[in-house]
Amino acid sequence: MSTSASAPPEPRPPGRVRLEDVAAAAGVSRTSASRVMLGQGKVSDRTRRRVLAVADELGYVTNVAASELASGGSSTVGLLLRDASNPAYGLLFSELQKAGHAAGVTLLSMTIKHDDQGRQQVASLHRLMGMRVAGLIVATGGVTSDQLEPFRDRLPIIRAGRPESSGRIHAVSYDEEDAARRLAEHILELGHTDVAVQTARAEDSYPEFVRSTVMTQLLESRGATVHRLEYRRGHDAMDESVDLARRGRVSAVMVPSDLRQLTLIRRLHEAGLRTPEDVATTGCDGILPGIDLLGLTTMRIAVEDVAERTIANIARMIGATGIGDDAGSGGSAEAGPGDPAGGRVVHERLPGRFIQGRTAGPPRTTGRTPA
Image (cartoon, rainbow, N blue to C red; front, side):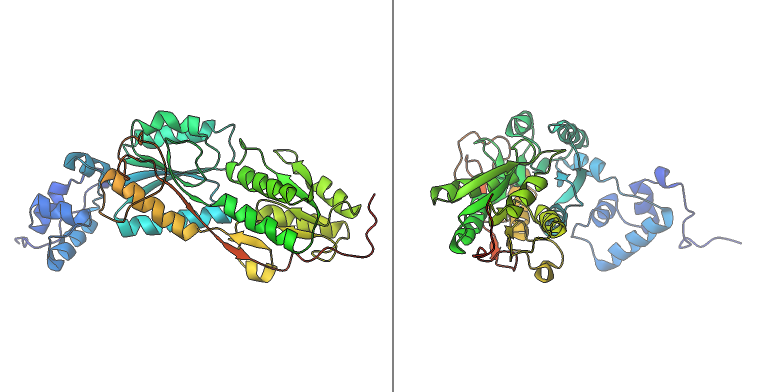
């Protein structure tokens, strides 16, 4: 019995199926098959359905890197993300993926939770480069500008989220200074004059360092007495915060993240102190699920806007899309490869939204017994 020419082709081991095999079985050119597998246009719906059906039958998997190398271009960008279990970074990851898909940019991601002075994160950037990505997005506060310098001359690179102090590295960041000022002004408006501020070290978390530093500076400039409590790995500054509140030395404690604020509130309650009746607290990020039910006083950082602007800029750098208006502000003429801003370094800072919450109220006027 003869076999019909239209019978389904016999499946082959996935690693041995070539694009030429798919094209021949589908009765189309290799170019048409390639366009279908890469999601490009210029093919009919009927051809697309036929090619995809045959590819599925054969077990064909597109080698995106090889296809992009063959075409002389790439739309794949490496993304280094710090601690995706953190709600703020988790949302940023999702929004970057969403914006990347809309812009035709594929993100190849790696994440690091704990690191020693950024060494593991720098190693991850090298690994991403080894995968022949067209550019890099660095969404972590744990890598310094000096550590990024060797990369900027080799391929387009941009920070997402963290403010960038260097005049040579592109960045789209949350306006951490604005967030800190608005929180500190709220505490002052409530009437607090004795405040504890938990402060971060720049090498541990640059965004939290900026937030805590600006909070402290503004409070002191307005005449408040500020108790600076530095935290680091192995020392969370919570005991000192609770002790100052218990002894009536402070009426408010400001911390630079909502996760720390929740820990602080728990520790205060364990010590028999109520929030905000006995001590006011503030945090920052505004991303935690159910934050409206928790009633935290905080700033909601502009995650969606940062993701959209980051992708728009990196897409221009690698030539993946024609998105956008003039990008960024400020910067020097040494922008590095793929400059999207006419010779200037992109430094965009996007403000967030204040959430008043219920954890910060006026200072208690009776019953305080300062030590």
